Image (cartoon, rainbow, N blue to C red; front, side):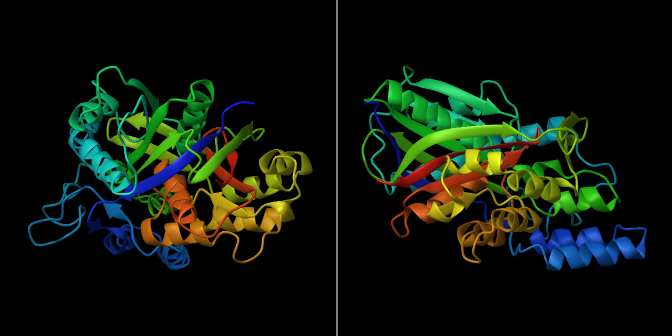
Length: 356
């Protein structure tokens, strides 16, 4: 029988600067159309988000990055080089904070592999090398860097760790997702991109995956791409950061896809939806969670963990799903769980899981 792989423990970290209220105030002053401003305010109030955290420092007076003296205060926003300089310093620090949180729960000796997912920055040597050196991993540790996949990159990272452990039962895989989404504020007065930026915050999560039967067992993965949807989520590198396009059609397209019995069956591993004991759905936004709940006809408590993460942290790209799993791993025993995330493509990826 193949070896099972388990997420033994998860540690999480966010920066200390809550930028959500300041962003909402800033955005409301930028709309030329009063109707757009009113709609944005209504959507912000209904977003289900209470806090989003940023690695960008407060101003000397305690203001946000968009305040006078902040990173985004100038009429011309910082270029991609300036943003990547911040990423090169802040991403390793935040990633190490998540690993330290994991180490407080789990012995991290004997790491053989290091899998890192990060979609919000680039630097070479990569943050996998920078962090490995900083935390004292031996040079012999095998590294994998998953980049620019978007919000479902955590699935790719954990799936890769599962494959490693199943092929080498002695492997101890350190998995890290670290995302600095707030480095990518873009100049706009349009409603749709403002609503997209309303969702995102910074965060990091680290997990140990091994054959030790503790925590959550990682079961079979799944992946699918929704037809005729490639233009709905786009992530482009520009001279002023990475520009996200998140179409308002995404929730409806997700709901329509999950209503297809074939896709729903792929997501649940062939089980009836009622047999799924827990859901870890990427908290990409309230409308996305609502679409999943509606399409699969889930009960009102099914996505409690995802909605809680959204409220406390916003959408942290790939790290978000790991935060949801972190809440579930410390909760009640789980049978037949499903993890599900969406991203550019429009793709849906995930895996089954259950308590060890």
